[in-house]
Length: 212
Image (tube, rainbow, N blue to C red; front, side):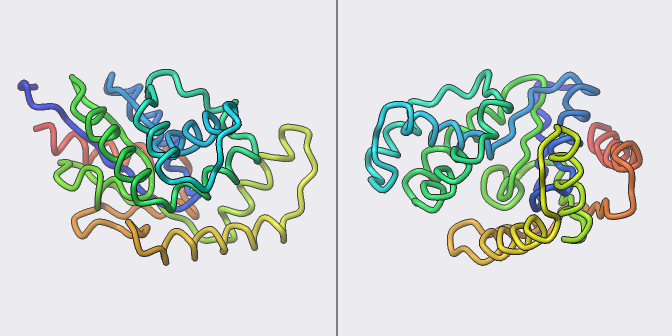
């Protein structure tokens, strides 16, 4: 490889498998990985921890700009209350701007980076040499989320999760600022009937071709 940093942009809806795939790719190539959704959750957690309001855009932006991207703890940040708070600040243009700038700074780390989220290939890293859009049917994604919760010994209702998945899709795809959609040059990976290993092998072929 040359001094050029290899950036891999991975987008897609919730529970499509993009997070697992992103971590596998980063590990396989020795690249840095960032789940950009956690940056919104970490900002929300910082606001909650300090007792700051969730509806003050200037305050939220200040906290977002102070965020340290290293060591974001997925387990801590996956708490439902933090997710709810994150959805409130994620619609603020100033917060999105601050976090996109931080994500873009992360994307140039050597030897390469893998960023996953909802607007990586379209907004954060539009020039990434490899863009993947990972998706699956709402039914499959709801089933995965249901199985995940049950596997942790918690109770879950499939129909409720299915409705949540559809609402999340509508919100992500319908928002005015950085809507969820595939970049025009993204490779589409539908994992509805594909194992994560199979998806990884397909992704690897695209990445290896770009590295050459």
